[in-house]
Image (cartoon, rainbow, N blue to C red; front, side, top):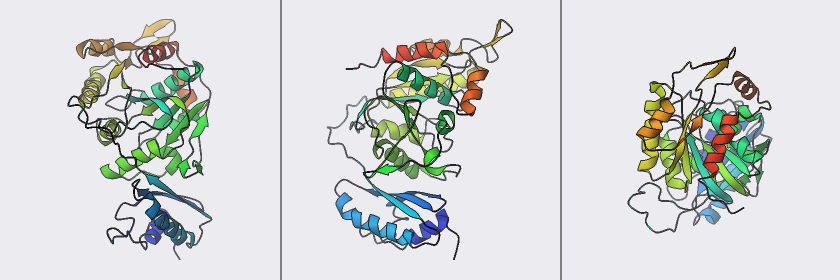
Length: 345
């Protein structure tokens, strides 16, 4: 018999039929997010609110088929039901943000985006989360970079999340709740096309027991693609923060990110210029140029939240998942963001 792997699990699941289409549950998209860790197997069984009760027997059948595989010690199949919005049709100026259903327990959902990779967006996200937590807020991070999740590494998190009452339980580090594809799949590559990415994002939003959070930061992947549009469509964002570095090659993509959020009706809370300068031997060195973020803010009529220095000690700490000090500039930026998010504490 073949050793236990994702492929052998998928093969077993293909023996279960989708009663609605006659296809197997893998090819019909009912089952997704299969993860194999040693003898532990987990996957998601997708349903709508109307079909959730009827799909429970499919979930049990899937668990049974997989449990018969050699090497399986535990099977966890989570039934997820995507909540459909009963809200009226959206206004014309917000054509893509049509699902206004809030994330249960979350007061403010804020995207942190960049338009391109390598500008320190994830570092900015983690530091902002720590700054919010130090101000007494309840904070979470959803790592939406499906292909390159880095938040678990930065927060020193390992291992698969637990499941309680049919929902994933976020990992917690330094007062920050976290959910990431990096926790679900470990070092395995996420080989997914657009529709699967959309499902994965929605499951990490709504099939997670976030508890009561004041702010849930969403660490976005580079670009302006499926994840960005799906997030704008699936949840009411309070706003977006756009991160860039000073040079033109970064600001041209940050400009596109600002434009995208405006097109889908998401308020842009401001622009952060990261890696603005480096303090070396008592002098300020600007390896990536000067003033690109502030110039972009003026060009796009958007608030400039501030510039952040390049801090090698911070990068080393995050690479090791260790404790770190928040740069003063990012503490100030966190305060400017909170000014734009009304709270009833």
